[in-house]
Length: 327
Ligand SMILES: NC(=O)c1ccc[n+]([C@@H]2O[C@H](COP(=O)([O-])OP(=O)(O)OC[C@H]3O[C@@H](n4cnc5c(N)ncnc54)[C@H](OP(=O)(O)O)[C@@H]3O)[C@@H](O)[C@H]2O)c1
Image (tube, rainbow, N blue to C red):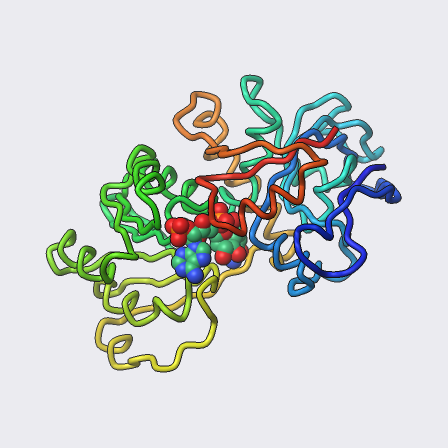
């Protein structure tokens, strides 16, 4: 099968299309002919050799895909050949074929394209697991979402609204801030202009927010802690700005009963990923079908343009997801 491959870790130019062995069908699984995949920050790290795939998983990049089921194992009765599905993957999505556990494959609404469906699994499951499982988000609460126009951010803004809470975001350009407001954010802060904590405090009448989804890490830690309300939670989802914080005021955490929670989707157990997939799609299927939730697709590249797609993300240009079609 055709797959995107690298011989050595490197820049976007090291990506090329190669012939790789198709994965073997295993009990409980289905084979999918992939039509679209999407880019994630983790792929950029993996390409540079800084984020190896979990042991035993495909060494081809790609954490999600959408396509058509082409073969099912004998013990699978919930999915049939010809079904249109999408799924979160531990790797292998930048290829013509993947094999996934049937319980991880979600049937996609008839009105949804493969390009849209491929943009859902990684960012919506990340946002949902952090808001609902870890953040325990309640109606009326306020969430601060950093990198609001990122793939995960654009999913989180919509989920927060659907769950009856409201969001404040930070984003680096006027176009990104506008998109976040259109998706339902109540306030979009230009973090390049002033410390975000000032506007967070002003918007919440000095109280602070109940939950923060953070992808930036160390440079934001102090402001994040100051932005939280009593009993607030900071969820560290990424460390794009750095992982090592010089100083943490533990007094602030103690006095305000704050919680700092780390999260990683890729290394969760298969059982947890199945539980998350099933719970999320039960919650979201009809919302995607009606259009109340939608994946925000910024650009669609062909498989041959994969290097441009990686470069586009590396330059922080995307608002929402970058999708790649697989022919
Ligand atoms: N823990 C998990 O399970 C998990 C799962 C999925 C994703 N993630 C992480 O979530 C983050 C977002 O992923 P994504 O695919 O949604 O990203 P994305 O679509 O590529 O968006 C990232 C955006 O973050 C902002 N940014 C980049 N570097 C920054 C910095 N140093 N300081 C402030 N803002 C910065 C940029 O927007 P601006 O122009 O607004 O600055 C950039 O466009 C990544 O760190 C990714 O690794 C974690």
